[in-house]
Length: 267
Figure (tube, rainbow, N blue to C red):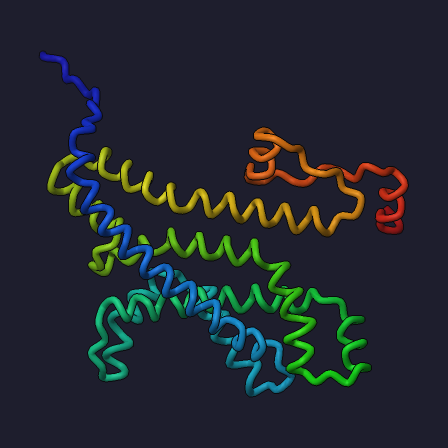
């Protein structure tokens, strides 16, 4: 009996011809991601305000909307908006528009909860002081709550945006010619799925990884700026790489006296 050779030979010659098609798909992925991120960043704020409203007829529908989109799979939402929504409304929605609506509705729910968490983290003493200064609700939101909440939640917002960029790969199930869809087509044409999808993964990584580094850097800057007495970051290339490394935290407080002052009581 002849032995069967199961060794796989990685053929890089298919990558060059496939790259232009994949870049076309990447451009469509970036276009959809940008529209969805901008729209959800705008729509998430009024939804968060409605979620915190003391009026039940405003608060409960907002909470219901948020929970529906947070507790159901994104692929199911895409399929429902793509197939069921046009039938219910009696409209002929373009496929690309349906996908943008579904992704925006999904990300808006998570954005609103991020905004709400940031706004509720503002110390109540500052809001009480604003009331004593006779600032109305709009002024309090504009000058006190929103700047602090947005600054605190920037890392979370960026993380949600990176996740949405990756989740756009699900739209390939609906026939939209995004990066993943183009990869599927090329892999079936060339019979080299390992090479094609490796290149697809590299293209996703090239976009997502710098964004995650930026998220970690901003988070670290926010933590460092809020830590009085923290050691200054190390200079040079090594310090720069250390600050960009995901998961890295700012150094401990240098002054032991400050440690005792900032240490919570009973710890």
